[in-house]
Length: 250
Image (cartoon, rainbow, N blue to C red; front, side, top):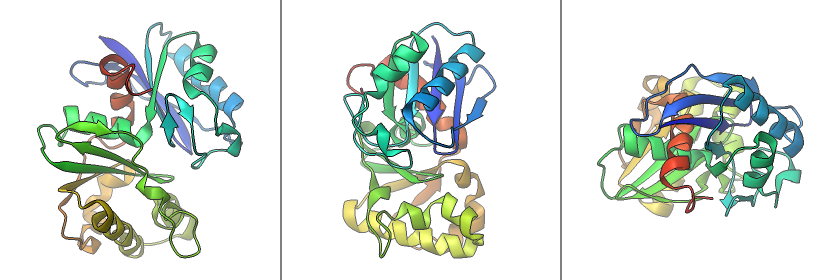
């Protein structure tokens, strides 16, 4: 079945039509910059613009960049504080006039990777890290999703959350080389390894495509591999979740 998947990030909101059975993208990705205010109403307007672009009518899957509980935003993440306690599912459903399933964006990327990508068939405890404006994380036990596993929110030194220091946005903002940033990212992975002891870490997000540039700086014992689906994983996973888990995930 063709489903619209929308992936919301701190810098961009993008969508595409997806085959929810095979995970194949059936259209080109359409992207609109996230409104600079990162507030609910302007972002809901962009959400509708993406839906209208595809002239789409049907269920929508949405990856959202922070912690959710039953479709309600519980932490602002990299968005505006006005998002806290907003029912994201209801807001986007009202804006589009269509049924929307909302899932954490890293969970969505992980869902795509574990069902259609390199994580398919992997047993044990697998953690997916998405590298972008923040550091999202999705956790899976024998392929089953454990929602809202936000490891990027760990405090570090003077930072209220380590993603402000070790995400791709920090690399860009501070003009860091891959070596300088890779060492920071490795420190984050050291925390992940100590806290949850995963069997495998899969990297997603745009920066994962440059894994060869910084893999020599990743020195943790846990195997670390790139996802391969890169920026499409969030869209694919959101669309699939809308069809396969519309109740349990939002």
